[in-house]
Amino acid sequence: MEKEKFKIWLIRNGYADNTSISYSYAIDKISKHLSEKRNENIDVYEINDLPIIKKLVESYSTVGNYSKTGNEGRGTVRNAIKAFYKFKENAEDISYELADEEIESEELTDLSITNFSYERDLKNSMVSQIAELFPEYKIFGNQNEGVEYLIEGKRIDILLEKSDGELLAVELKSGVANFKVFGQLSMYLGLLMERFPEREIKGCIVAGEIDLTLKSATKTTNLISLKTYRMKLELQDE
Image (cartoon, rainbow, N blue to C red):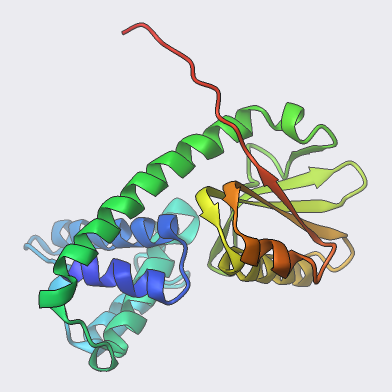
């Protein structure tokens, strides 16, 4: 139950669906790691003592005893325990009407998992077709560094690079993308501008459908473009 609460808290606080799932499983990874290290069964989700969780944040930080584990998934484990600390820190301010929301939470979780799986497939397909879909760009960095590019604890789905140095941050949504995606991508662009002040930075939202609120939001800037995708069905023998 606590794991589901954590997922919902992440989504309600602006984290992307795939991030909420990644972070929730990262806490499981920490539980397993601690259990092996201490030779006892430890479930981090059951810990409510903030000082103890704070020590875990320090242990999995870049300078902590478990920094190697904290760095896994490009820092996903480290960022997950930091988010978990904030979640527990604000637990008293969070009102969960479990009786009324239990079904809703289960539906939200199922939907999140479905969306995550679909977006993962979409991302993999797009990565393999970058040369066709974005002919002027290539994936940023070496060894697909631009795929799920990590910046200040946030993940950009795909970061592309032009020959002249221009960067294009691509945000993928498997379903309908609304104005909230605009805010999310705008934040990514701001972070990229801070990290690469000498480069031109742009963004592109790729979704199954573009909501009118998103179209209205993008009228305020020429830095973000909108595109919809069409998936091709292929059959494979088993």
